[in-house]
Amino acid sequence: MNFIDRSALSLTHSIRKHNSDAASETVLFYALSLLINSAVSVLIVMTISTITGKIADALLVILAYTILRIVSGGLHLRTSLACCLTSATIFLTAAHAAYEFAVIGVLLNTVAFILVLIYAPSDIKSVSRIDPKYYPMLKCVSALIVASNFYFQLPVLTTAFLIQALLTTPFMKKAVDYIEGRLY
Image 1 (cartoon, rainbow, N blue to C red):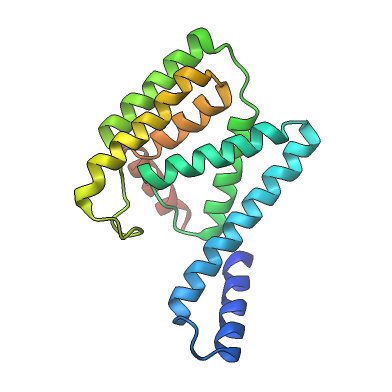
Image 2: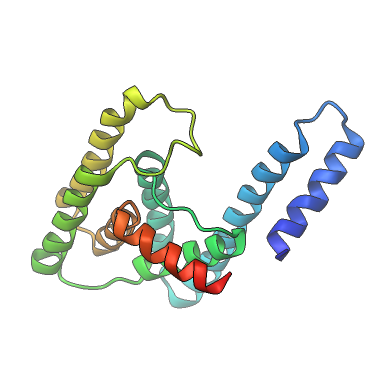
């Protein structure tokens, strides 16, 4: 058990011990591990981005990526630590992206746009209570979020959107399943 899960479990037991009316241990553990995972990831990103002078880009990436992730779904890793470190890596990679939008950015943003049109929303049935009848709307919102960067023309957003769009694809799910199968 990694430090995120141990911390979440410890807090879960403490909350249940002091408040018997609190949510079930399963619900508390899931919520707390998600919260701790996110907090640690953001702390890592903000620390490194402060050192590199990319704090504004990091904040923008975290916000934009998270919003797109909520509506487009995507694959989930098996452990909270893997998720935390992968999220931090994605945020840092995107926040430090630097290339000319006029050619590379347009191409990559177009790829991200097409991928979310094809695959979003992906893998959200098990983690969301959104009725499937709203999935076409989620697809449209995902596409609009990615398309907004044709106006903003920010390489950091292009990179964040492309990575998230890739995480909605069956190919990436198979690749991660293969890697995780080998590691765990």
